[in-house]
Structure formats: structure tokens, C-alpha cells
Length: 619
Image: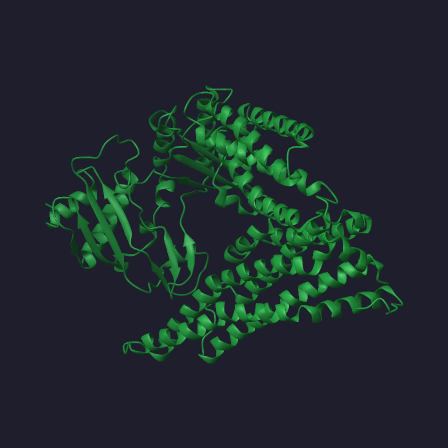
């Protein structure tokens, strides 16, 4: 590009800028393609031959079974691990390319030279942005195409129901564009490359950590609030594209997640163009052309430092949390301001913004300890509830059998959770929630606890398709399990519908049982293979113990029992599901596989314990 070139229109300016920038960065495209090849296709080329040779040595398998087994290995690699490698490399190049393409904005001589050329600012910015996107996209496309070609060469493909590499590739492209545009926005706002890098890093680290701290505090303060951050990853990464990229690829984002990042990328690009129009050339080598990133990052990190340090100190005394918030937020605010301002000369002025954090914290904490505007007392209308899924961690001592896999054992079809659908039982569950609310409201306004303890989660699926969810915890430091949750557990265990939906043993046939391993702590475990009659008797006894509440129940115990019985149940492979199981699976066609089930007994009067004694399998 030279200043002697006369550009007639904006499109011509854009086109010339695009191709000039692309030629200048073609080496980066080659380097990116090389690194992606080393991280993805090369791994496949090394791994698949070894997998194929190992499978070929198994003479018991038919050719179709060998192909299926190799396809599962291929699916496991291209469906999760390899796309994650691609994301990490692409995100690194997003930052590098942004500095290479837009680094002139932070150099006075360079910015004067570029702005003196007969090219409009919009064409200059968008042309270089499109060149960067091309450098990122082409190697990614070649990478995923090559992985598909390698699979075809071995006659394998992604197994049915597995995550498609095409979907993973599209997510990598979208999140690469989002991260690159995010970095561009920071480059336009910042006056130096260091400030742009620090701002991008501050948002992508500070925002997820802030959401984590907020959810943790809310879970330890507000009854009914679920603090499991795994349930809120889309919220925790909504403004952090570098973190969101891994969530999108490894977990496959929802339609709303997709629309959000398409829209946010467009907003960031439009914002970059609009700000670039107003950006003064004199801003180069200054701290910031526009102060928004500095204000945002300083607030995020101040809040993270305060809440994080407060949570660390929480429990030492009644005021330890607040002392931690004050000290942590002040220290973090000072450190961030010193780094951004290169000294203390603007420190006094910056404390006005610290006051913003203080006001927000007081409002946030006050809203939580007073119930968050009725969140703590809200219950659904039972007549509008379609079903209720119930999860009670630490309710069961044995894991039971809750997971169903497909015929290849590669894909999970179902994770069973106790579910209530009968109208009377739904009303009873709503009543249980109302009783819990009364118990927690006895300590109103709420105060911060030091331990979230055991939990009971009620997930109501409403008839309009929405979900109403509440999680109640025992908070073992101030509210013990016996007084808070045990009454609720007892009432749930009294519902036949609840009991029959908590374990797959109610949906299986006796011929599905393969072997029974028994351990009572007195000697090494013993394994027995039941005949058809014994399998049927065992299933009936186990179902009866579930109905009687004598299996996998230790929530009321304060110490280990003197006598106990642990049973590990192994199932046949490739089970043909019966009518009841097919109904549970929603009409799934095909054979299924199950993980082994584990069942614990502490009551010798349990039907299963007595039956095994009768057979002489237990002393």
C-alpha cells in the first residue's frame, strides 16, 4: 500500500486494504495451519493406526465390530480433545494477529502514516479485520477437513448421536471471530499495546471469577439459590470470549448462546468502527483513547479481590467476611490503578469509582439477605407443574444405577433422576418446599454461612416449558441436616412414585442381571452368578428395600454402623430393553448398556440382606 494509490470508492479502499493486509500476514496463516496440523491431524495419524492394530489383534470381533470400535476411538478424539486443542491455538493467534494488524494504533508515527493515506478509517479497519478473520478461518477449515479425510481413509466416521466435528468447527470459527473482534475493540480503546492486553486479560479472567464469587456468596446466603457454577457457564462466560470458546466447543452451546455471541460480535465490531471514527491520532502511546476498558476492568478486579478475600476469611468471625471484602477490594483497586496509571498520581481521583463498587456491594448484599425481592418465598403453582425432578446429594450412600448408554457404550442416553408426575405428589412436593421456606425464614434476615452442606434440589418443569428450580442446603455450621432436610427426605421416601423413579432396577428384567459382588467388611468380597429364579427373587427384594427405605440411606447416621453390606451389581452387555425401559427412554430403538450399580445396607432386616443370608451368600 502506498500513498500514491488513489482509491475511487469505499469498496475499492476496502478491497485494496484487505488484500494488502492478507499478503503481509500470509506467513501467520501458514504457521497457524502448521500448528493445527501438529495438534490435530498428526495426532490422528499417529493414534488411529495403533488403535486399528490393537483392535485387529482381537480375533473374536467381526469386521463390523472392529469398524465400530475404531469409529468410537475416532469419535472420542475428534469430538472433544482435538477441538479443544484447536480452540487454544486459535485464541492465541487471535491476540497475536490483533497486535500485528492493529498495533499501528498504539504508535504515533505509524498512526500518522496510516491516517495520511487516501483510505477511509472504516475501510482501513474493516479491511484489516477481514484479513485477520481470513487468516484464522482458512487454516481451521483445512484442519477439520483433513481430520475428516483421515477418518474416511480408515473407513470410520463419527458414531450416531455423537457430537459432530462440523458443529465443533463452526463453534471454533464463531468464537475465534468473537475473540479477535473483542481484542480489536480493546486495541481501539487503548493507547498502548500493554493496556490493550491487560484490559483483554482483565475482562476474560475477571468477569468469570466475579460471577463465580457472586454465585458462591448467593448460595451461602440466599435459601433456594443454586450455586453450582456448572449450571451457569453461559452466564459466567457471557462477556469473556476466551473462556466462552472452551464452553462452546467442549459442551456445545445452546441456540441462545449462539445468538448471543453472533450479536455481541456484531456489536463489538460496530462499536470498534464507531469509536475508531472518533479516535484522535494523538491518543497513540497515551494510556487510553477511551476509558471504558479501564473502568470496567478496575471494577471487575476490585469486586473479585473483595469478594474472593472475603470468602477466604469467612468463618473466622462474624465480621471476617466484611473485613476481607474491604481489605481485598481496596488492595486490588490500588494495584490496578497503579498499573494502568503507571503510578499514584491519579489515585485520589480513582477512589470516586471505588465508591461505585461500595454502593453496588451494599445493594447486592442487602438484596440477598432480605430474600432478593421475594425469591426466597416464591413457589410454583402446583396446577401449572408438569413434573418435578429431585436431586438430593448425600441422600444416598450407594450410587445405585441411574445411567443408560447406547449399544456402543459411547454415548449416554439417559441419566435417571427421581421424577414426580402425579398431581397429588406434585402438590406434596410443593408443600415440602413451603415447609422448608418456613424453617429458613426463622433466621430472617439471612446471614452468611460458612459451609453449604448437603443439598436438596427441586426442579419444576412447568406446562409452558419453563423450569423453576430451587436448592436448599443444610449449612452444617448453623443448621444441621437432621432438623432441616431429613423431614423432607422422609416425606419423599414415602412416595412410591419417587422411590420407583430413583433407580433403574425398577425398569429392568431379571435376565439383565449378570453377577452380584458382596462385601460386608469381614473378608474379601465374593462374586456370585444368580440363576433365573435367584435373579428374579433378588430384584423383588431390592425393589422392596427401596420402597421400605432400607437401601442407600445413611443421611440420618452420625457414625459408621457396626454391620453393613455393600452390593455391586453387574449387568449383561447389550441389553434388549423391555417395554417399561423403552417408555423411560422415550422410544429409543436399539440395545443398551449400563454401568454397574452399587447398593449399601445397614439394616439386617432388609429383604435383600435376609435373602442373601438364606442363600448362604452372606454370613
